[in-house]
Image 1 (cartoon, rainbow, N blue to C red):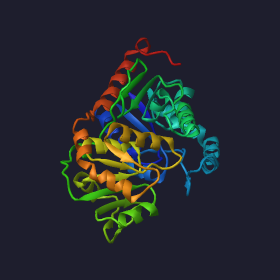
Image 2: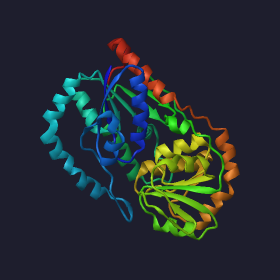
Image 3: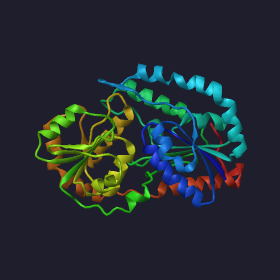
Length: 351
């Protein structure tokens, strides 16, 4: 089949997953055309010759995610598509797509409907559409995240929903799966070293100050900063990343879905520092605490981190009992593609 794969360029979680998925699709004999945006995403997916589009980025200030800045600065998407829609449509038609696959990328959703082709949505955000507002959460942030998800994945014929929480009953259109784990992660042989692995999407002076005051060794990945400052060793993304992840005794990081999935697979306790104002991060952080696989704090303190570190043996025991199937997501996708190939009689009605 000819598959158009729209990949969100906000963060790299969807991008790393896409590399694994594309390799699996090609191995199964499918042809894949990639659409994405953002310089890092375009570079990471460069081997697949991606088509550059425009997409939604999130913007933050000192209080967390800024809704105003996010809306205002993403208005650039409108003139881009007004100027480039005809070119993009010609390119898509020439590819003769059989199906569209979206990883939280709305242009591929719109294009699938305009070209009359079935759409498969594959993300973790759609789990929010099957949840009641969790107690104590910010209702506005929850409803905003859920509404954005409904818009970005509207009208899909199938939904593959990644979840490492309570597994819900799948249906003809909605399949709940464990997240895919990259082959390079699967090949690692983790051990419990002496350092704590820290991953930050943007500098966090408060956390860095707390870590400097502690009698621990921290290996920090943040914006490719490099250098040693006392007990903090800053490193750029590269060959050392996977080894530092596999050999750490615990992880401190923002609560993106992909790194939490990797931590569960590698059996690494996780202390989450969710980005404020982004409900998906809050949702993932709450899972860590409720599952007993880690902890989180939106108001950082040395005491909270020390309490987490003391409980590492407890978290390790619980992680040892938590099952995550690293191939379930890609195998589910391949089964759905076979259902689509078999013809309209096998497909559920699009609602």
